[in-house]
Length: 161
Image 1 (tube, rainbow, N blue to C red):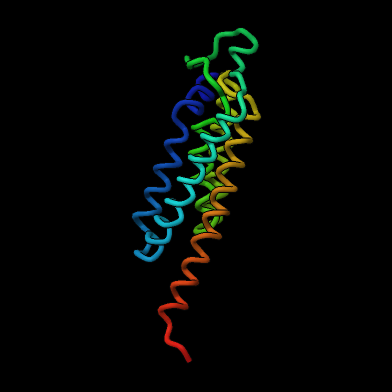
Image 2 (image 1 turned 120 degrees about the vertical axis):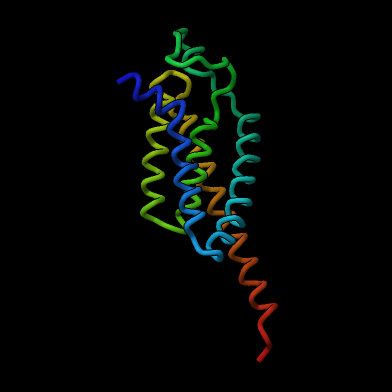
C-alpha cells in the first residue's frame, strides 16, 4: 500500500498532464485556441496567487512539525501550497470548461495526488485544500476575464445594424 501512495505523491500528477495533452491534440483548432487562452491566464494567475499565499502563510511540513522521516525525501521548507496538487488542480479546473466528465476524472486523480502527499508525510490537508482552491478560483477568474474579452472582440468585429 505504501508503494501506491509513494507513486501517487511523486508521479501521478504527470498523468493529468498526459491526459490534458492527448485531449488538446485531439481537439479542434478552435478548442485548442480557447484552451491555450484560458490555460495561459488561469495557470499564470494560480502561480502568482500560490507565490503570494506561500509568502503570507507558513505551514511547516508534517515530518518537520512531528519529527518523523517521510516516506519520500523532501526539503524542510514551507508546505503551503502543494505544488503537485496545484498543477493537477489547475488542469482539472481548466477542463471544467471543456469536458466535465474528464474534469471529474482529473479531480479524482488530483484527490489521490493530494491524499498521497499527506500520507507520505510531506503535506498537511491545509496545503492540499489551499492548492485546490487557488486553482479553482484562478480558473473561474480566468474564464470570466477571457469570456468578457471574447464577447467584446465579437461585438467590435460585428457589423452594426
